[in-house]
Image 1 (cartoon, helix red, strand yellow):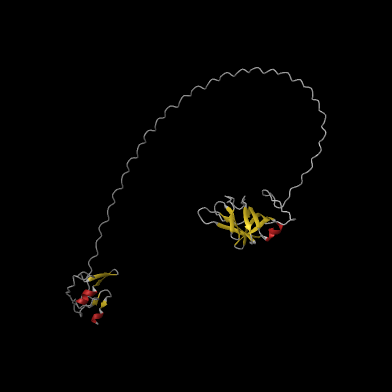
Image 2 (cartoon, one colour):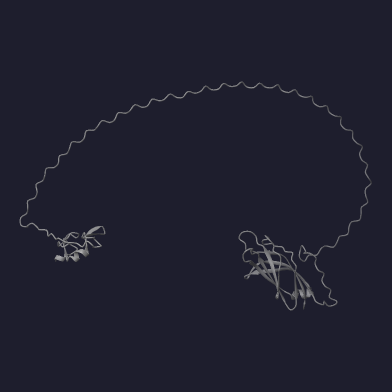
Length: 300
């Protein structure tokens, strides 16, 4: 059935809030087939927006009206609050619908949208009266006004009452005689100031304390007499220490011609220079390893 659809989304009760700070600015997008229109934006309305927009669609073969409630964000993407749908066949017979549509967001309830939908078919048949169009938005959906109540018949008036005679006024009372003022009280005589205080006399300093007498030093201690040495044990001839003259490489990058290097806090022979001279770098060619305190392995 073809005709004209008049759609009025006039308020909503929302459960979903897309704003963390401030209030939402909701508006409604109404779609039917290839047609879609928007309501005005309810600025700072939060979860209880109210609109006063009227949307008109031309119906041909469509059978569903879709509603989307969005939060308007200036400068960024709008946020979806909820969606609802309404079958047009519901108003093709009754010509009018007024009620709440449940809003859903990702399978959960996000509130409800209150709408008024009217359908005016083309070539309305005879004998089917057209429903009268509502003017304005009703305060309570579905409620009808009460019929006017008949007024009460006028009551007969009472006869006019006669006023009481004027009562004589009280004679004026004489005023009180003016009271004499109090004599001015003499002021207190000026108090003499305190005499200036003299400063405290300077305190005598403490006499210098005599120093402690010098303590006599301890007498010098006499050393122990020299102890006689142990006699030379016969049998072992005196040991002769081998003296090795080595000419090191002055261009060595490890010891720079000294023949000795520091490794882990210990002084050792330069390995490169002693090997170049054909000598053992552990004992320096002496045959005795001083670090280990024993005969070098090169002599065994």
